[in-house]
View (spheres, chains in turn purple, red):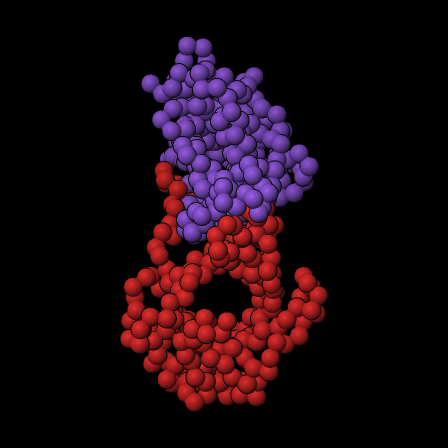
Length: 238
Length: 208
C-alpha cells in the first residue's frame, strides 16, 4: 500500500511551518495572514511574484499539485446517542500520494488509508454528512530546487480565492528538527520577512520521523485558519 | 531522485461497487490435514501461506434500527503490515442460479491508528477474536481454512481459547457488481473439494 513510500529516504521531508506540511518535509506557508497579499495585488499576482522569485533562484517547474479537504459532520441522527455534536471530520487527498486518502479530526488522530475510504464515506452518509460548500483546496505549481521541493498554491473555497499556501519539503532528511534551520534559511531566501515559525505539528515530537500525515495535519490547520478569516482581504483571482 | 508522477487531480478511486461472493463450510480438526493436502493440489502453486489475525468488530449506533458495522483486522504475525478495515453490506441469497452468497464489500488498507480513529468517529467495540489458519489462491478465488479463537481477557491476544473443534472453510471472490458468473467457477471448485468439505451458500439469517 502506498503509505509505505514515506519511509524511504528520498521521500522524506522536513517541514516547516506555515501552513501545512507534507510528507516529511514541507513547509507550508500560509496564505493570507502569514504572507499578506501585496497591496494592490490579487492572489494570483502574489503567487506569480513568489514563483518568479523561485525561478530566479533557479528552481525548476515540475508539474502541478493539488490538496483538497472535505468536511464532514456527525449527522443529526446520531447526536443524541454519541454526544459529540460539533465534532468535525476532515477527509483529504494530496496529489503527492495519489492512492491515499487522509481522514483527520482536529487535535485528533490522522488516519492514512487507501482511496477506498471515500467509498466508505458514501456508505456512512446516514451518520456523517458532508458540510455544504465546505470543500477547500489548494492548487498550484510544484518546483524543485536541489533537494527542496516547493509548492506554491492558491487556496480556493468554492469560486473564491482565499489565500496562498507555500509548502517546502527537504528530501534528504526525515527528522524535522534536524533540518528545520536549513528549511528556515531556504524559506527566507524567497519569503523574506514572511517566514513562518515552526509548525505546531512539531510541537511535542521534534525528534520523530516525519510522515505524510504530518503534512496533512498542517494543511488541515492552514485550511481551518483560512476558512475562519473574512473573505474580504483578497481580491480574488483576476 | 526522480520525482513521483504528479497529477492535477488526486485520484479518488475505488468508486467501483465491489461485491464479495462467498461459500462456507467447516471441517473437524482431524480432517484438516487431508483438506490442506487436497487444496495444495488444486490451488495455484504458491508457498504455503498461513495467517494469524486479530479482528475487532465495531458498531456505530444511530437512530437507525440497525447499527453500522465495521471490521478492523490486523496481522499478528507480520509486523508492519497495514491494518485492514472492512465494510460488509447485507448478504443476498439470490436465486438458485447464483451459486454463492453475495454482499457488498469495501476493503481499505489503513495505518495502525485505525482503532483510535474509529473510536474518535463514535464507533464502539462490539467483540473481538483471533483467527489462525491457511490461505490458498486459485486465480481470483481465495480459500481460507481457519480456526476462530475467543479472547479471554479483552485486548489481550496472548490469552485465547479455541471456539470449537473445527475449522471454518471459506471460498470467496471479490468482483465488480453483476459478475455473477464467478459463482459458477466457485461452484465447480467447491465440487472438487467434496467430500472433504461441503461448501454452501449459508444464509446468515438462518443462524440468528
